[in-house]
Length: 195
Length: 114
Image 1 (cartoon, chains in turn brown, green):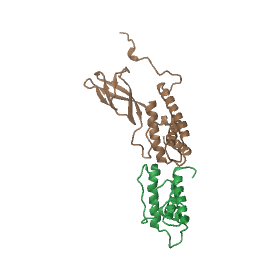
Image 2 (cartoon, chains in turn cyan, green; image 1 turned 90 degrees about the horizontal axis):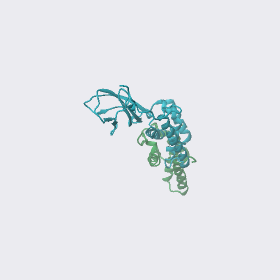
Image 3 (spheres, helix red, strand yellow; image 1 turned 180 degrees about the horizontal axis):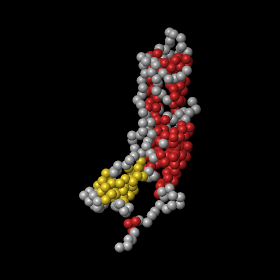
Image 4 (tube, helix red, strand yellow; image 1 turned 120 degrees about the vertical axis):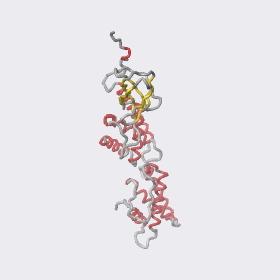
């Protein structure tokens, strides 16, 4: 991951004369957060055991922090109605039978960062979207007032590219990166089974 | 000449002040004090200088202490030291020189073409 982040930092330094690395890293964190919150591309399946005695369960991701509950399914991959009013706490609509459920959640970056001040994100995401992330960083940096790199016109340009990139990433996430794939699949709960 | 330690900054400022031969016109205390004032000033102009650290303060007690300023802005602080030193004098020419150097410090912190 450090190679990709180094490339992002080098790209930012080239286009932001007088920018400090600490400032770039601050904006990088905010850019990654916005990118992940809007695109929902960083997802994780978290399994948790359920019993009939309880409808509330706490789930914890392996990295980052949960921003959205996308879906809960049972062991037969049938969707289960659930909500997440508070992050990490899943509330089931109905009392379940004893089973193992899977919660698909969307994640974003969170503090603390690594020792060199970089946020923890999946490397594949940085490899694939480093250009979009760089546009976001440059755009945000250029909106800072009274800096050698303050440039309103270029800030608009780079921010527009960043937002367009988020839209593309969102669409790709919905299609699971399948070229020409459809985002919607027939709900399995409607399936008719032979008796 | 590298700009790493407090002594390096003082030496560089003395060259611009044409005050390199003892007894000095401007004491080490004055020049180090000017450096500290410049750091406080920079906190107002460029808070990003101190995102991960507090504002340092240096003394003549240890002139070998490393000055923790980003490399690209070290020269700007020597200009501040020179301008600040000139402020002490009362002649018209030194007032102009003080203004020039202090403005150069401000410009280098905020503008590329400086």
